[in-house]
Image (tube, rainbow, N blue to C red; front, side, top):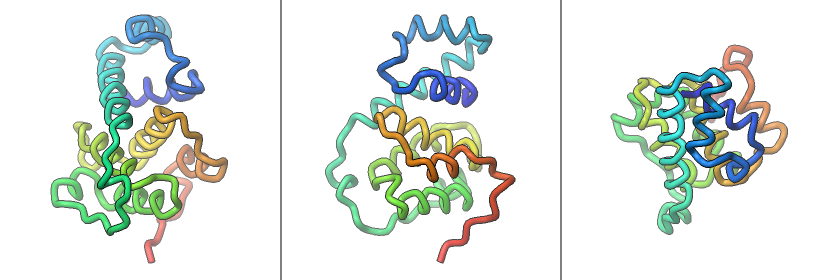
Length: 154
């Protein structure tokens, strides 16, 4: 599924440049993606787009500290939670976007979510909202996890 999402990000510079879902599924199939993988990616992306389009006034204006419940900590893991906090403190993610990232990560069948997949979720959220991360943040989002020293939270 994540290969399909990365392909969409790299191929279509914004979501409205994508063809309709049926035509997109045919194009993705022609490129060589599996039908199940295509279906999962399109459903996941549709859910992301639906969430990103909804305004949550309380979350959007939140200035408090986000505490993660046990289920979220188990599903995300410390590396993902640290990275989400880093993105929020760097003003890459708003509190509303943070909640969308957490929800989309929890929708996966992976525990804990790898940092690489979390980065793809963040990129897809920004892409679905027509936002482009600045060059330095883009490198951090697309960079290899193995090349980076662990980020310390102070």
